[in-house]
Length: 223
Image 1 (cartoon, rainbow, N blue to C red):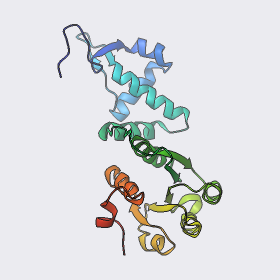
Image 2 (image 1 turned 180 degrees about the horizontal axis):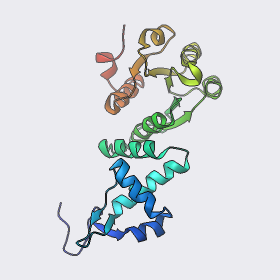
Image 3 (image 1 turned 135 degrees about the vertical axis):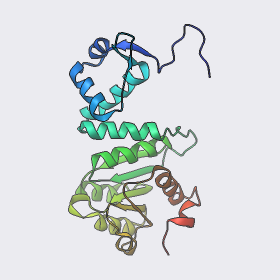
Image 4 (image 1 turned 180 degrees about the vertical axis):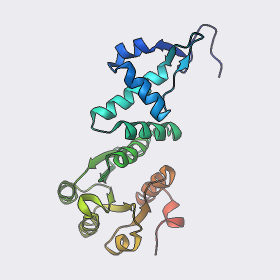
């Protein structure tokens, strides 16, 4: 779609690096370093060689800074931004807001990655990073689906799968960087996916576990 004469696209470079420094409070050297190291947010250059950032890039930098404030490392924050730009899923407005997904993860980046794609589907999401807290939630306030990293807290994910299966309230998607499919299914997981997760397969699997897709029945669940 074209833009009227005199109206900038949000992707047009309009802000100098000095302006971005003032708006975001991040040093110019940091911005240059991120540009050179990650090649993710690369501003335009004026005829005189000055960096010009677009509104869209300023928003992307705000996203990176927010993730840093939450404890993420710069490389992981830029990697998460790359994934969001690569898979721009539109939020669904028709999902049942009472559906809650628990993510029990050991890796903050993987948790952020999974949470993003689930929230774009309209689900409420709880993210936990240790066995004891996840166990308490499964016992006291079971979610609709639990996504459990089998290596959480030194490999306690299988116990969480067994606990969720015993409680009977939550469906369980086990995930791992190791091929632990058989062990996961043996203790009661409903499905298993290898990490790193493919976003479309991940979302389809969740929807199937909730009874809204046939994807898992075709290609993920193992008899």
